[in-house]
Image 1 (tube, helix red, strand yellow):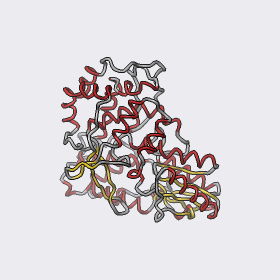
Image 2 (cartoon, rainbow, N blue to C red):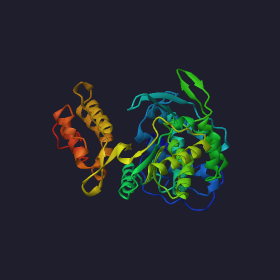
Image 3 (cartoon, rainbow, N blue to C red):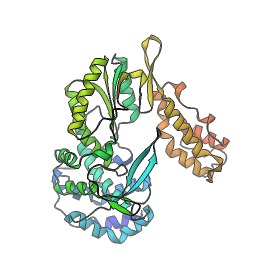
Image 4 (cartoon, helix red, strand yellow):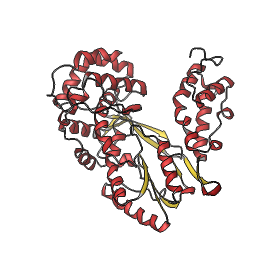
Length: 415
């Protein structure tokens, strides 16, 4: 590994004094939520930065950043170029992190189209800052995540979107057939830094880590070569953003739990299930007050109190089968998005080799493999009807069926 030598050569140097409360117990995690495992030299809550910068943790963080790929930040360095850069510059960066003088680079503004129209704004940190954030995440996640509500499912270890959907379906089956479907207006752009940091300081007391996280929040945004200061918001694109979002919104979860409500939250999507429209309106008024306390705004145009069968949640909708049994299906809009994406990935004019097409499908398909566990099979989109190339169609069908090995398919022999 390119970064490995730099990490092993420098991260064993003396730094802040380590504590001795023992390593946080690791859990089975996915994506960017993998915890630090071996090599954490003391894991006292007053020593989190030393844990994050420990050699083994940094190597694991680099593996995650490299696996997630991603584009360059404002410094223009790709992952490979950053690895070469860190071979000589990491000792100085590490020292700056430990003595508190490190300043993160601004994030690079990127806008991507939303499925429902409009644009979603992302902030892409440099690869170096993604590495540092990932290292922090691996130490903070095992400590903070167990304090979150069991009704929260988004970006958490061992929890997936289809778990949230199945929980929601159970509430509807139990007779709570009206839903308070709340949409927050530009949530990630409106996060108040002072409120977020105050809530975070209730969970961790390492001042060095809190100072570094605040610097990431205020690092600024570069657009068209111009750096703009940021006074609120946590840009989507950094490894820490989902964890920080859950820290802030957990306060709303706890308030709903105290009132005994049945609800499901996935990131900033929150659905509360009640028995009547009148009860739903009361809950919505209470939620408006809770979000206002956090300086967040409810998007009134997209928020509603309505029958659960008339709303979609995380790409699914509910319907009633024989005997009043609640069933789940893939929402029409989600199916169309899936079909368009498959057509785009497999079109003959794409200028990509078949192995490249299969690799792209391999990264896109896993989320759709779990659909039969959530939805009625008839509602799951059929890939054979939308894939352009016959060979790509066979590979896509194999991936959709759960077979990762597609080497037996003609033309995909390199796998």
